[in-house]
Image (cartoon, rainbow, N blue to C red):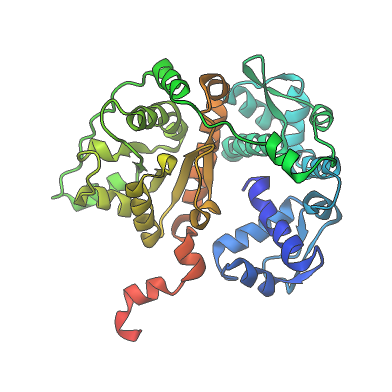
Length: 385
């Protein structure tokens, strides 16, 4: 779990408990979370491992550590919050601190080099890939990864603090400074033309007569739910780019075969095969860019079967609140000069999110599990309701 994801608990303590110790059950009720779920246990455990909070998943009270309190106190100076987050997310974790010290003030090395550094810092070989994925997520969240002269660099925390805005200025000024520029059609066209991904491969589906091999195939499948559009549309070019340049490379190391809906049916049609893939694939990645209604419908179906899912969206596209609080990878496609230097980072984040989703297995959280956990009881035992 990344630092930002673990920070949710501390932010909730600040919001609902004014930063003071709060009963665990009261806090989880305010968050709409089930106290006994594996996801909640993982959240509380990870928050404690980062040193953000104190109290185990079965403790009566949860409280903030001194550094965790500073990191999440909205009234604390911004520079102090950034420093506290750096200490918790990077400096206090030995492999992360070692990688940071080795490569700060340098161009971000390849993933393979970072894995060697993690291994050299004592990370067990079984956890090296996950270590690097989480380090990159944390470093990006803290602001240590910056684009300089067209490539990604790891900058020292001192440089981050130098560029940290002071606490002066009106709320309107701060909002204006953080505004996102919506990509123009010309910028989108330049991005997709530069990469010009090859046509999607045709996938041979297993014959329905062999149920064993059919199920086995789904266990190794990632189904991509995406806005596709007509052959020359911006949506199709976006979908092809995201598939070939981000998703497929990101999932190579997880042993998953990537399948998109248009490989098994006509674009825009929700067929029996599509629904079968949504229900049975080991992982579903849903690209919520362009607010396509079919994509949201298919995402809801995936929520209903409560299996692993990862959401993608272009930075700047509005993410509805009811799905905005679940794992989502944002892809900044403002223009080609923003996207290209960050391709490897985006791939690593997709890998990290996919790995975490599959680790959750059947305990994937969604609006259904959060607000109506009895849904599956109604489906499984309708006569009792």
